[in-house]
Length: 219
Image (tube, rainbow, N blue to C red; front, side, top):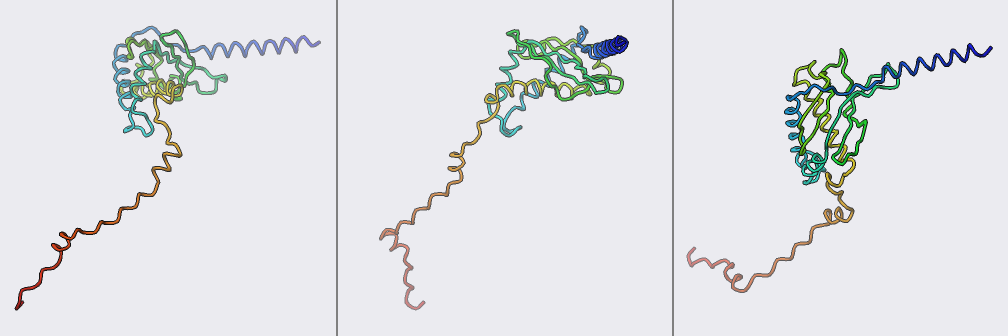
């Protein structure tokens, strides 16, 4: 008489699997080309790289901007898409996959905690960026970015660029950040200043010159 219970359990598992498959199908970029996004992405990318200097961010190495450019030359494609949560009641986030010129792929990278586009969260770009020589050459999307004015999409692009470069910073921190000050360097920096040398005695000629001349008679 256990078969009704077994059948019920199996049916429940099947429903759960179906619902998870239905709700977790990743929303991938479409094939609609968006030339304006190419220009926007490259503009924000150049601006972000130009700020990778010690003057803009304390602790960065003077070579940080060049390190970022070297990394971008190795990038073939960035694909930003939705990653659905295990439970349908949880907000779904946007992540990106990174493909390098050597064929290596890293999936599900964090892109700033952005939520997937919906009726109340429009404008998040679900897009695929193909790069050539360190800059976007083509951008295709599912059109979600067109639900908002271009200016409202800029923060999402900035977030993607920040975390794209941040991925390489995590892998190669020495290429971006100045070396930490060693205890020896700190000790030398805080060493007491060398005592000033005692002033040398004046020469006889200077002594004679420095004496006060006698007052003339009658004064």
